[in-house]
Length: 299
Image (cartoon, rainbow, N blue to C red; front, side):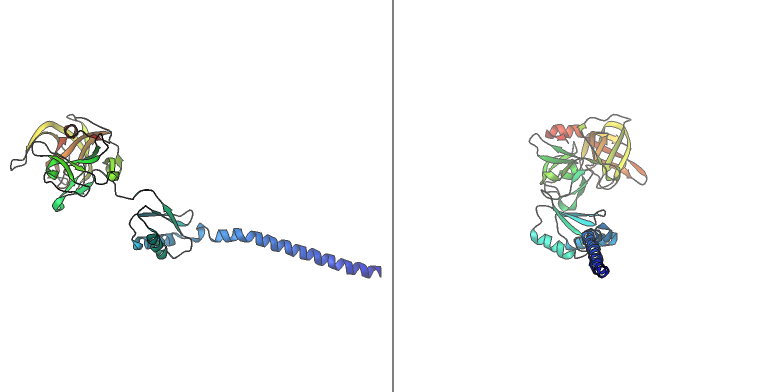
């Protein structure tokens, strides 16, 4: 009798233990499930090609005022939208990027995304005339301008960055274009490879000095100052005095471009002969004269 009772009581104990073990296992499985789900939705599930496809979709949505980049580590395409982008624009982007789920991340940035213009960048004037920014400058009130060649700004009108504010040509060869949007004016000049060279002061160059220049057509090149106070007769009464002569090459479209050495602004491209395939000689308007004439400084 007692043995039968023992057997009867031992069976539920074993079952209870079995049930307890099963419950524990089930609880462990349930507690592990969220981690597994997190792993499944993590960056490993989003491939580089999927991120590229998402970026292409944002490009096709064509919403001005946006920028985007792939964050491969997090498996996200991060889209930054400026203040001009409305809710409807964001909805258009979200509609364009449908897969994979959760890949899109929207961020806001203050202000407005605009192109930056520095020394060495091309600007376009009335009639499609193309010249190059020499140096960005500002006056005592904080108004910002681009210094360029005077023969570029000789005809009044509005350029791609704003209206002509001053011009001196012939005799000298410098002009001033005011920025319609001052926030687009970037300090410095474009150097080799598009790097930004900081310019913080201006001075007169010296003969034999190693100098560099940047043109909207030729890009960045370096050479030597070969003479000062040169005079050039361009014809039709257009004579310019007091120019810096160099062995740098320039081409049409480079007019107004910067001449610099280290952090110093030196001159603005006026004209030249030859080309960058065979070499050439170029002349630059001393920038100190232009800065003094307009009461502005480089930044």
